[in-house]
Length: 103
Image (cartoon, rainbow, N blue to C red; front, side):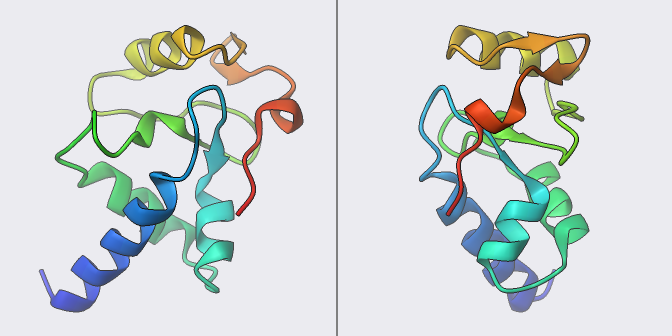
């Protein structure tokens, strides 16, 4: 992996560390905050996260509120979000706007 990819991933993780418990952000919002349209690359960075409990990638969801994938499974991601107070119903964050964290 190139250092450019590592740098991008680290920038994603640094932003994600700012998202408080009880809030979520989207792949697109992280990309926007990094002044890019590379939201798929943000997803790739989340998939490569080896520190799930330090870098809370469970707080990143799709723009439509769907919780998406997670290293420990979608059910575990939903459980973690619900434990933090985020309303999840049928695999989506309910009222995404009310739980959304913007950078």
